Image 1 (cartoon, rainbow, N blue to C red):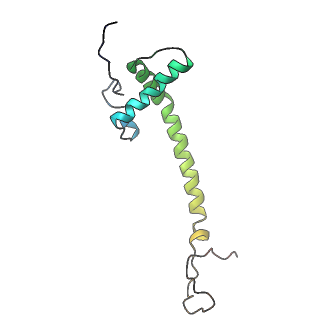
Image 2: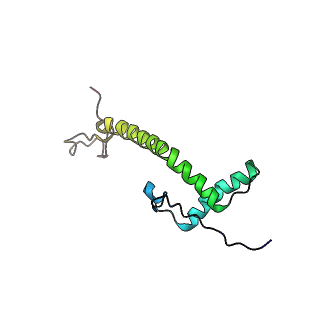
Image 3: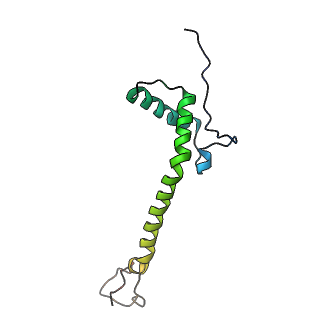
Length: 117
């Protein structure tokens, strides 16, 4: 077999922009190679198919464009729920009783939960 130059996949979409960079992530070249390597390995081990780096990159790019936004939106939704719960309990978590300097019974002047009414 002759030696062929290996084509490199760049994660560039049809407009020349990097798909992974478009997701607000800085991905190093080594990471990109590892990312493309995963679908290549999957194809080899699970599908008994040998994918080139370019083919694996195109498949990966498709999934990133097609379901990436859905996964991103689910992550944002989870973060919003977490932050809402944290803000709702802010007074209970970070309440400090005022005018406690002269109380001798407890030297701890740290953060306390607000007394329930």
